[in-house]
Image 1 (tube, rainbow, N blue to C red):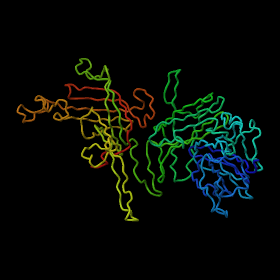
Image 2: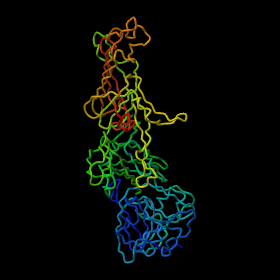
Image 3: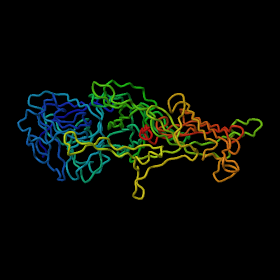
Image 4: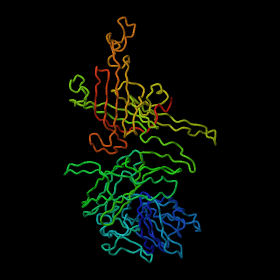
Length: 602
């Protein structure tokens, strides 16, 4: 027979974002609670500071089954089935072996004698964690339940063979374990833990299964633009599911990244009936009606960094993050909270407390951009009516574009670039000269100057040798990067570069080293001929005009963020008596965030 414990505790949320607050009411005596957020400061001494707690117990799940749940009054610190935390004023504190609190776990908490009902507020981040059931055993667990509305025990477990119809125990107001005698009419509660029997192995966690690419939430960082959220109905009946955006609570302390604002999201809609496909701004609530048993709702989510509100951080901070929360809830009251965070286009390095910035933030677009240009219109200089107007070609031509943006926002056109590695360096340990410590860590570099190649090592392995990764464009014949001039920021303005190839340049298409009529030398191969005698200078004016939308109306994740593009224009002089005008489109994808070339060496 199951004997005596816990008083019921209710959990509720102030739903305010990646950082949120779970409030659990602790009643006098024993309490069985389910912690849904990962505390910002998870050390037990900090979590329970100011709370009249006598002891905290976590079930130490092992491989031995639990067939009988003993009276909590008989729990002894140090026994193998439980981990225990005791406050500093407890004589047996030295026996404690529970030191941190973890989200998605069930705990027993006993208040001190004489303590009154206490509200325990836990500020933290929600974590989606699946239950690891111990087969053929009672399990001490809790579930993701929304405050105020919850399914009954019978309906909640109806989709699980291992738990349906099995014994379940909760703690009544007298602090005794009580069998759920009427599961069809008894509802679960938010923030409460139970002993549930699992008949055999099980992977069941709730009426719907939530699958994330990252367990800790939708964490986009600076580089990710798209992640997939999968919601599978584990119930034997059709259910409706709502995905709701919620704002973020401010971080609990200065040693966490500053809240810059909400994370703007879009979702990918596929409307085969109306032939509509593309990214649509995620509304405040997105509903999926009649999700059938076993059916999975695959929700592709994109972060829209160009839509993030501009933010100026305080003088001292520990980084900057845009933060939000998604609530996924079905029509019976089962609810998951998902943290969402992303860095903006601008990066803000952490600063020292009371000091100025440790480093100047690099340009938001700094790095290497690799893509291509597609030429679909070329002028006909011999045309009598419109010799300068580009006309459609029979077959478009495509060539590679390499563009680098340095930390100061200067834009350069590249013909080739090598990704290489600069090994780190060591220095004597100032506290122990017999040892060394890292002076400069190793890092990847982008190299365009062939003379710098011996100073670095390869970035990848090929046939057992370290080699560089090389990217180049056969459409250009210059050796040194060419600076663009432009208006506005890279990605939103117009940028122009002059690519000039001298008449005697070895890469000039008119010049041939071994052809007497195209070597720019006289008949005796002694004197150099002037321009125009055998060869002509080639001048190319290249214009990149960025557009807010994809030039071909494609629906690409990350457009305006790590994917840019627009209209391509070029005027070529020297190949014909009249300039040749070509037009097309171009696209660039960010391949690296390294904001310097040749490691910044002169």
